[in-house]
Amino acid sequence: MTFGSENTFSINELETGRCSLHPLQLLPWYFCCNPNMQKLYECRDRLQAQMLHDALAAHHIHTVILGDYLSGAAGELSAIQFPVLWVVENGDYPLARQLIDRYLGEPQPDRLPWRCGRCGEMVEATFDICWNCSTPRD
Image (cartoon, rainbow, N blue to C red; front, side):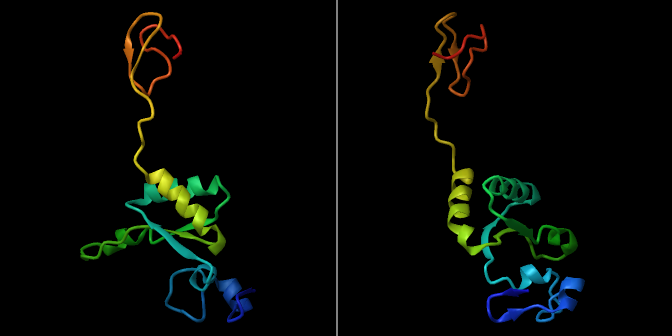
């Protein structure tokens, strides 16, 4: 199997899952030497990394989370390691970046609080049904 012209992987690498070019690397060979992978976003924790991974998967963008368990191994060390989300295919990067920016962006209030036409109660903008009488927003 090849990724580009310079990287050819042997049967041994396919069986062991380890890259002979980088024997100390803990990543599988297909992540270690894949020239198409691009770093997308350094997440604050494992939960955020998984949420972003799932959101991108819904758009058919293949991503991997690397470094998600390194913080547990640090122990008393001062190094802080956060999970990093990588896009596997280079061509998916622009759309992935756009989706991540939109997902992480501050929500813009597009509506104002409204008054219920039936009971006259003021209802927060986030609600589409009056909390007092269950009347839908006009």
